[in-house]
Image 1 (cartoon, rainbow, N blue to C red):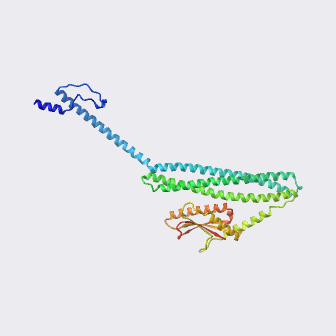
Image 2: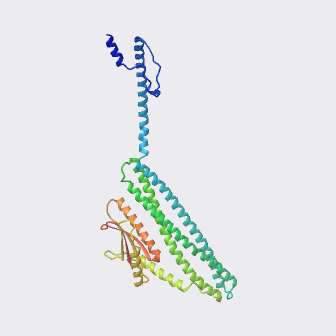
Image 3: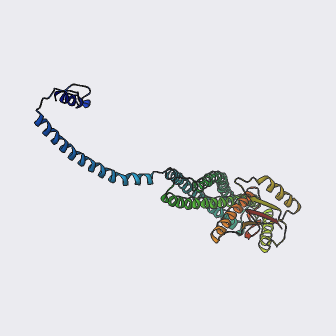
Length: 379
């Protein structure tokens, strides 16, 4: 019996062992009787069981409560969601840049209009004095002429500023197109949730709106630059004729070169509006926008310059051709993209020196076209 008790005593854990949580420090030995020891163990097991149940319940509550937070955090912080957040920041920067470009354009137009108003007011005063009759070389009229010349040069100085603004807008247009392509490419990334695609669709619409606004700004600036150049050149010739009138004290009128130019432009404008491409007619230039950054400028310049050499009064029809396929929404998107491409070609033509009055912008859908195209016809 004593041997059995000794064996059992050796199998039980020793009460003299050190506490592991105490970093290896030994504890004082505790001596209890058999009845007290068994009762203490029973109470310890019951208390530890109750604490374990409480701890388990607390852990379950913590897991169940934190699970929804973790799931919501996972929804908000996906890889695609982070990409969308970055692109939303890029969109804000693009929007601010477009707003600043519009403000600069408005300021330039207001300054140009003010200079032109003062210029024409001075010219009207000189013309009125000459119409009533005055002495040759009247110093008052000479002073008016000098002031008018200064106002005209102020208008001419706005043209380089408009060109600089157009270059800045072109840079933002390239960035906007890059951002639009990045947004569309993000749809194909894995690991996105429904909210990410909802944000992507909103972001795509906003970026597309900014791209359209920049394209419209570029078109307006191209026309403004062309118009201001023509205006300044004509008025300089008129000022030369007016100086001769002041010198002689007689009213002559506008410059003969300006009058001839205006008549030629009026005839070309009427001819451009009365003609349209006929079915089966061969275009002068076909530009296929089947990839990004199509380089067509040199070929377009060569074709148009040869056409103007053969016929200096030639006019042009610029047709935006879009593929007629897919749903109605897809056809509308193709038509809008083809028109933006045609407007870009029109800006290129005006930058090359072709008056905008000689170019008629048209649009049509072609069921045989596979990509957006721009056709240029000569008249």
